[in-house]
Image (tube, rainbow, N blue to C red; front, side, top):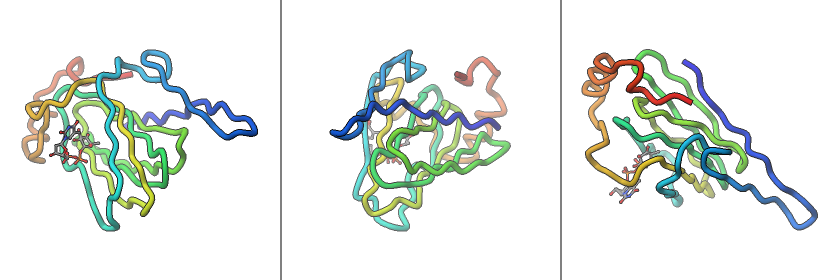
Length: 141
Ligand code: T46
């Protein structure tokens, strides 16, 4: 399983750093939604689901956290520790976010608007979905 990690270009000068993200240039899809999570207490695990069609990029813009990605066959853990790096999360991918630092702010750029129907929240259902999925139903960059 290949994990796609992005390292964005910081534009720094003596005033500090700035990272700009443009759809189809830095981000491989049209950005229809941005959300972020914070005040995630220690020991918290978020996610526990996959998506039928949503693609996302997760960026820990402050602090740090870990993301566990599971494609139904293999699992990989990705640490997010820099505000200029992100991880691509394809649609049919079980994800869990955990090990949040007290100051973590995890920002997510999403290819679709919020739609509860797109969630797969049961792990066995996820495995069935993966096994019935043709290659062209799994988004790739
Ligand atoms: C994902 C991971 C990385 C909304 O009303 N609008 C939204 O756009 C989102 C994302 C959530 N919500 C509501 C739904 C729930 O009542 O916010 C509440 C918390 O959402 P959820 O429990 O789904 O949060 P996480 O952190 O488990 O998962 C989120 C995304 O939902 C999910 O798509 O891939 O972050």
